[in-house]
Length: 112
Image (tube, rainbow, N blue to C red; front, side):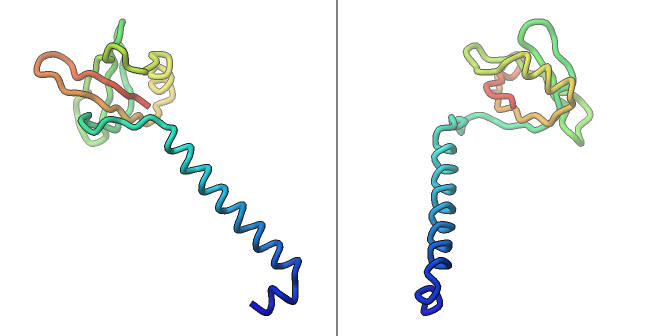
């Protein structure tokens, strides 16, 4: 502590760095709080979009699995078909949060 008293400029730098670090952490936590949270009742799959059909259907191939998993976009879901198509063209990894249906295709609620 005596070192900081003898060197006030060093003490000022330490305080500024601590304030900037604390402000950065607070800002990151604030941004995380603004992000909509995915409901816990949805299932999750991670793969690559490999096909799209006319309308609101797309397929994801999961690494290590032979067949594709087809999804239908749920009505009111914030999924952009252009975004899904870009993922398909770029072979980008995609996380899909979906709701299994007793009959028909699973409903995709989040795809990013």
